[in-house]
Image: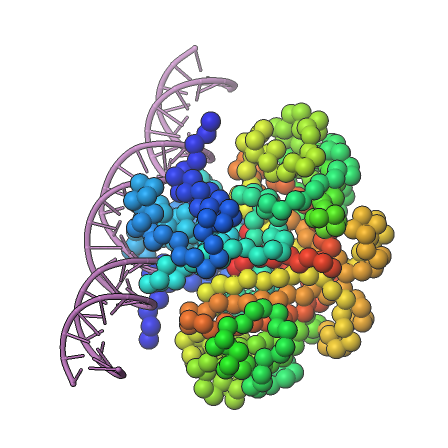
Length: 235
Length: 235
DNA sequence: AAATTTTACTTGTAAATACAAGTTTAATTA
DNA sequence: TAATTAAACTTGTATTTACAAGTAAAATTT
């Protein structure tokens, strides 16, 4: 079992406490010094953990006052995080596999420039539909370079996060990434899956995600139905 | 003159160097220890500065290797930052004032919940159109609580950042915030200003920005034309 | 010559310490 | 009592030190 750094341990602990409601909206977290003595670490370490929470938008820090819990709202939070937790959090996000993972050559005119290594190895391709309380919200197309991922295509993806499988079975973690966002009219295919009218506005995200494995990136093209829900983020 | 913390000074220096092209895409930044001796500070301080750069997506850190410059792409970067630099950066973003700043009561059914203090004080309202190389890109509507901002409505906004004025004249800085994003069809008014067809997909951002002044928030409703340009962000 | 090991670098994590600066509460003074 | 001042908190900034872990190049061995 790999041991996480102490500041990440504390981050996960506090995160869980906030999401479980042990600390509620508006509450003050224990002060940094209190956290130090509670968890037996020093202030720089505690502050690293709090910085992660603040980055997630789960707390707001106020000099002279403390760290105020700012529970993420009901909306879908795909923008802020991808990796630490999955997009939506705890609410029931169901996943339908539309196209099972399979190895294909990269499409011509890919949305991001590819390295030679990536081009040569081909990619693992899959399409998924994700529903929130029965409403289709995301249609996402994923591309992963076929490098060092044995038996990947045969794994079960239903209701399991793509990122969770990458982490648990291959030790691959998302470190960060970049994304482009536009509003586009829904194509026939997208409109059918998202159950909206053809041509209706859809949010389109193109993401390139970096991992801890050198040269391994995960690419996603995500179509979002924002009629009922909106994408939420902090900065 | 207020003096910035040393880590922020270094951040701004390095940022400038990267954007000016002194360090180029793919270059390795001087190592943390080198930066320490160059600028006469210690590693934690240097690391704070690098963390800010990494947050902007301007560098990528690799353990054992170094910090690699990753110049922000040509797209518009409104998602990542608002405050340190304005949305677009250096390229010529022209601003047209459509509705000059004026004091009005808050609209009923505001996009974010308001505090009692905010409700009582009314708000400063303005509408702007922002063009990139002649193409209208953003139409933004701004609301600021009318607290401690004397002579605000008479100031010149043309081609000057709203945030720059807030910082330079009132010492107000944006600390962070939250936003909702959806794709919506363009209304008549929006389509006219953005020069697109009515009903064409438009990106709609609703933002609440926190400042260093207690209780003072800046609210924006931004409509983006993403036909030619897309919104870019890192995470 | 090729493979391996070592070495010297890089960033990552963590502690202990100190003082500055903002906020709130308590004590003091008018 | 009301206003002011002081004290006791809070987070922000900064130094110093130490070792762990990942990477790349040099030295060694096979």
